[in-house]
Image (tube, rainbow, N blue to C red; front, side, top):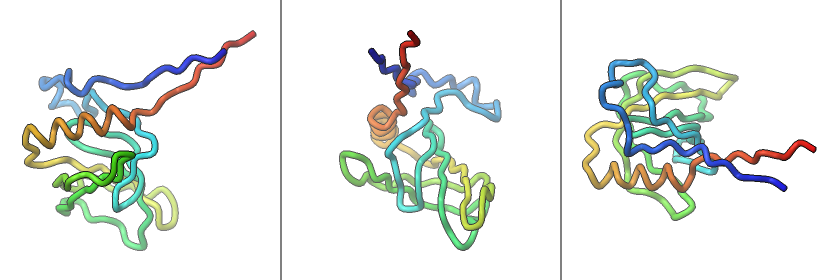
Length: 127
């Protein structure tokens, strides 16, 4: 018999005092969540980690708009800024994007997207 454990961390309980830390709490590992640029690795109230394929690396400081391709359809655009870029292979990059100017509605939408696409882990019973 298998059990499914959700790795969902509540975005609603995001600790605003931890904003000074490099790694912020509330990151949710995502599955089956894409955007126009590639795959969403994880998501938080403040940003997203993306894995993209491109001939050219995105530029740090570049303003972009992320439209998520969810199981419910395409989302409205989420404005963001590229904070860091790491090349992982030829033509493959991991990108850290920070959301900017999100109103309450966009933050609620982001929370719903994260809940639906939170990575699930199957725990197998060892006999």
